Picture (cartoon, rainbow, N blue to C red):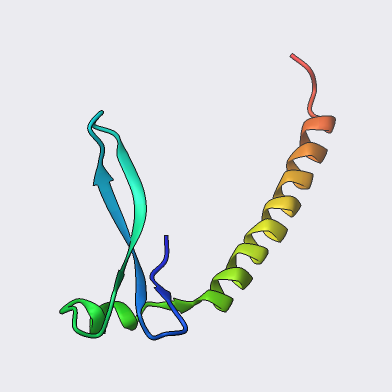
Length: 79
């Protein structure tokens, strides 16, 4: 999960919560410049547009990896 820099200058920060069933849920929370963590997190933040490009690259790379695996699997001897 990434720290996301929103157009309004706030940051959407990954946050984990524990449910009543003791399950960990990954969520986001928004913080602003008044938050003491803001400056440090701003340094690693990506814009919403950058995040879209990152996800598109993952999909492309995942597809190439899947195709490579399927080719390998087709050539592998059966047990």
